[in-house]
Image (cartoon, rainbow, N blue to C red; front, side):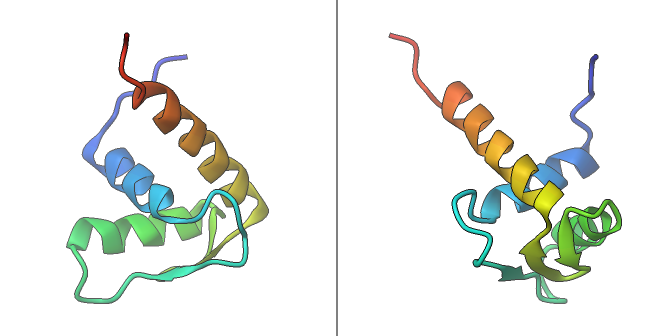
Length: 82
């Protein structure tokens, strides 16, 4: 399966990466004056059931699983080749 990294998807991943991948007790708030792409990303993530509020909130169970996997991917690609 091949996914294109569109600007919308990139914004969603950026926002998802801001959530804690180790605790579901830590949420975040996307303020109305935040970058428009992040405000829109929060709305989309909420629509997909990954976060509890359209302006952030907490990760849902699905969102927590996605954030944990994203954290793993970022660890892998962030490791320098030696």
